[in-house]
Image (cartoon, rainbow over all chains, first blue to last red; front, side):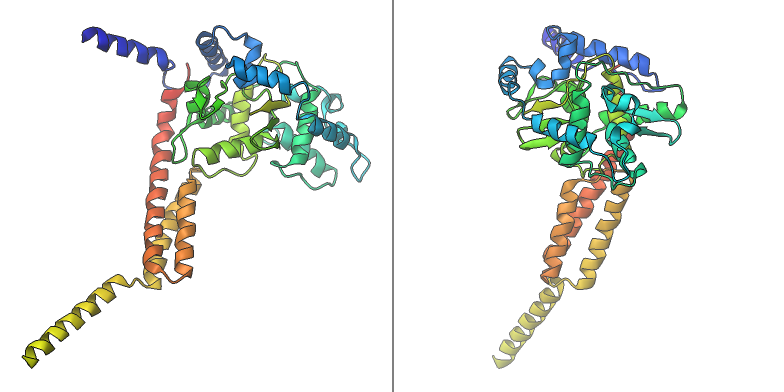
Length: 280
Length: 104
């Protein structure tokens, strides 16, 4: 009986991640702990392979993905995005005029904390800021045009390592902390947090799907999802996740969504961009 | 005999009148119940933690009321209020509880 109790206790300690009060914000320490947790939990997964999400967790799924990737379903979006990117606005300027390096090979630097506005700027928001600065209407954050543009920009950054900065600016630290809080907060009538699936249940099945680990989770965005029969932006994915746990989704690119993308992207620092991705 | 029958009839009529009055909810009753539910849902919205089921119950309440079925409408409104309050309780509980799940 005593042995059974001790065994149960040991299993509980192994299953639950180490916990401590979040008294101060220390992104560097969080990064180390986050990385160590997933490496220890999945010792057979090469570090850079975490960006392949469920395909790093399941050999059968991986084979299917490799077969699909011979003719990637996101290619139409990349081609469309490339054309959109090169098409001048009515005032003659292009998207490239808004970004460093003409917008090529820069996706890995997003999101970033903008000291001027005091907010996190995602790639999607930066694209719409560019449009509005040049007299164009903003694109819907959840629809195909935004997915196509971000797919193209992700494609030009394939293999480049995430390089997200969280400075000592208290506002940047607050945004990072808000993102961390969002990630671990339970919501919806099903009372799931992002961590419920992508930390505690990473690698497990939910119905027929394999849950991707949180490490490298955002590297493949935007994604072509078979379930959608089309491309989806980060906003679309976050909103769908909310609905799936019974939570009313926030507005696309809500401050909390941008902050959680900031947090997860920082946690993926050093890992290569794998987007645009294909998912079940 | 006739008196007895008349008394029985009077009692039955009175009971029917009472139960009818008790069963039939009014527009005002529905409006009051719906307003309470909406207030709770607005508070949940301020906490950025509304549930999809709350929204569905509010919608069902409105639909039943539009059809003149106020008893059913009030049931849905009361359920919506309960769900909204649960989502508020969840948000308040999670305000601190999330830290226990963080990988450190």
